[in-house]
Image 1 (cartoon, rainbow, N blue to C red):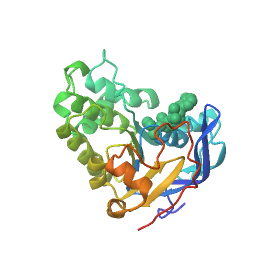
Image 2: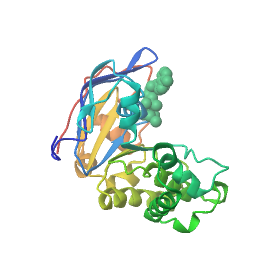
Image 3: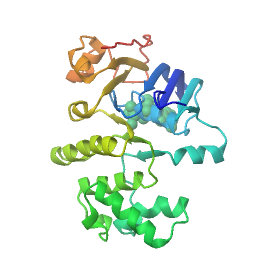
Length: 267
Ligand code: ADP
Ligand code: MG
């Protein structure tokens, strides 16, 4: 495995939910060190795609490789892989009766035998990375929405995962907090040498920090290219999503499957 190999490699992937295909014929390479935006309307299958990367959902067809190897099906190996993937889910998932520092330290206490003083240092370093070292002893209820999101981010970073995945990291945040979180995603990616996959329907907040964007609609990838190429796209499916038009080729009731083959567009 060389550093030039993609950190995530999907080939002819099909993912089903509730007995029907949510995504079909997905091919995707995620380059190491990049920030990739996964965009698409609500219900298009963005979270479903992430669940294949963490091994939570088994593909119906095709292959999923993460960090140079197929996502294992053996539970013990799967738990090992998950330590290498930092996940920030829509709800922050902070435990309300633990302090900020205790929340961030949770993965370290679960997965390592580090002495308390070392653990404490690591926790403070992670909090420093998100600009919240001063909030170490605060309780989650004392935090603003943006601060809570950053604490959850620090916790996702606790085990130094090379790959970060964010599922709708801006939900419920005001524009200022959204800007802070998105620039943090980019800065952490670059300073810690991570790769980041950001799933979102917040196009305008996400594209400025992304190296690569894909748009999911109608069960497939309808665009794959640079943010600049995405903005310039004339594809009706892409335009409908970017411009927020209610009427267009994307069926907003996702039970009616468009059945159009996924198209790829590169810059
Ligand atoms: P997104 O994250 O893009 O909003 P999801 O990946 O959550 O979309 O969902 C994609 C489709 O799969 C939706 O039509 C949703 O209703 C369906 N779906 C998601 N999870 C389940 C599930 N556990 N069982 C059945 N259908 C599901
Ligand atoms: Mg989702």
